[in-house]
Length: 254
Image (cartoon, rainbow, N blue to C red; front, side, top):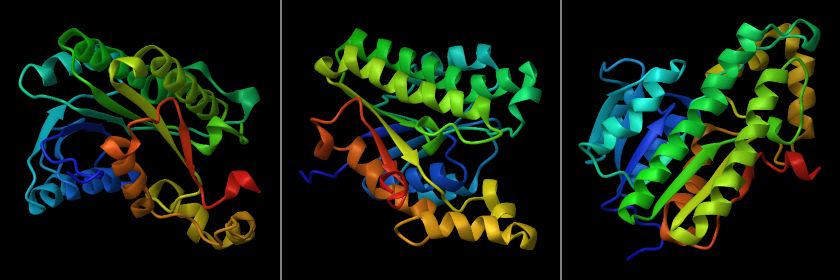
């Protein structure tokens, strides 16, 4: 079997309908994995069509990650009908506010989607795997903000710093039981979330200053995450756990 084969595996993915999450879904499917997409709506998505076009199965499970009660039932609903081998916590939101004016309603919303939901899903899938003696892989999405606080993003930075530490904490307990837990930390990636930054003429100097600081000389693309996701989901990374791997074109090394 190829070190990178995911044939016979099924991945449950949040945040898989666009951007980095969508690219990760397609990368896993291209290497043989079937997909369960967690979406707020059960409507068919472009991601589902693309996965099925690769000859893989793609099921949709409805769950609003902003609703804690829904998140707390997600794993039990999924494993009642599907065997899950891989969990990808890819969903995230960002709300920019000056620190002095960062209201608790916004803070709580960011924490729920970015940190509490991944905690619940990691905990519950891990508990399920342990109860049946099944190995598994968890891939969380961290951020440059896990390492650097940023500006006007106290809630986001706090949530992503938490993701980094949750990854280590779960790994410390489960790596010896066949459950590897790792995180991917994106740098500056061209997605819908930062379209204004990249295209607004009034922010051209800011965009240029960021690009010039990246040793790779460019912003990343969602497709840059296919390889690392497949690696962390596959036998190729059997002895890697508790890591947060930067995909940032060299930003943090500069």
